[in-house]
Image (cartoon, rainbow, N blue to C red; front, top):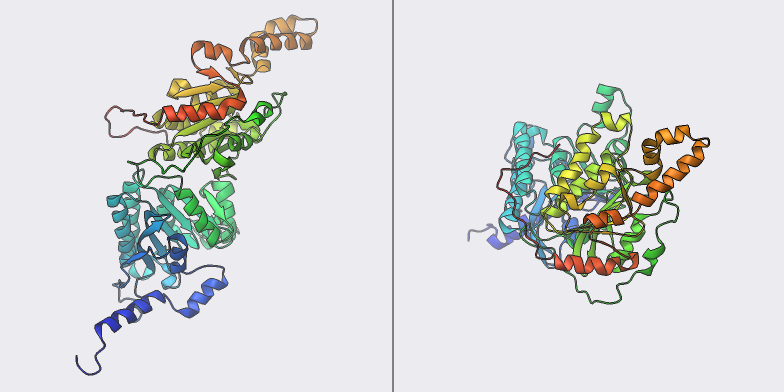
Length: 517
């Protein structure tokens, strides 16, 4: 070796050390001052200790324009590789905001595409930890092409392997479409935001004064847009939520979720016998029912603050993952509207893609009326939920707890659209509409001719209720498999899902259906 020449092993060690420094200690401290972790710290928290294998550590950008010839950061602003979470293989990329603002360009995009290709080829989840200022403008159209390459892979991987996006900083412009194409989006409160056009552009074009947080912060996307499935107060909590979410999902569409150990015990839930109020107009919280039914009362709700008139999320029954879709009587009486329909439809399709059985708890008085709903497309949006249930091939069980009125009865996983088992509680009311409204229409002339119209309405309402405000007519038709005692619901569901465990459905050959988007 020539005098002064660096030992090859020493040179490699020096390059790796430089790559791990990212944009430098000063920028790292600025990140921490904002309550943010480094790209590598995030990966260390996510993956099992010692399991991370990095790919592309020594990659650098390829542009020499606008002063980039003087800036060469190893890794090009993104850390990529694979490792394990709770012993299961995952692929991960983590953008490094300390390197050119985490901006995406050719080499950066190629690294992300590489791990996505590996995830697809090897059938394992891909997790993106997003923290980027957007496209690297110094590289022009090459940056835009890099985004499109990622989008294309998101679509190819959709429904094949789980894709999870954590937004841990800025995510703006074209960058938002990759997370939007993934299965789940998590955001951190106060430090992350997503929008297509930022506050300055909004002010110029629409003259609206709005902050980045108001326009696209975690709270906004959790309550107004429904873009965020989960939020967390800080990054450590967000990464814990990713791990929890992965526990309910399989590695890919060819597998089933990993079952947890479970021992049979006393499955009676006597609290369910009194959970429905005697007054049919009085609300209750359906999550109280869900927690009585799932193992240990553990329920991971998604989009809890968006379209709260329907509840969706993951739980387990007998150690097996299930997806829960439940009307929420404590919000808008549990009606289906545009937000609830699209929220539930998306969740149903996600569960179906990854072999997660579905439990539906139904208490729905119908679709929300009004010009706002009609003019904004409740017809096509409500049809999305109908389509999603009709298309789903996973085991599907419905429990009607109280109201099942009108077209909403059909849409909420009825026997007519392919549900495997349908149970009803004795409190169930399965009818075209409520007794009062039905009596006013059917007996309009009798009521108008009566000396005491109010008394006649009450009489006819009771008459209609006696005929239809119960589950037995539907049971007689076979639309309901059995009317069950509420306290026995969990045991019946356990046996039902066990019976359906090997369900296999073969659909007609086609390119794809035409969902009403």
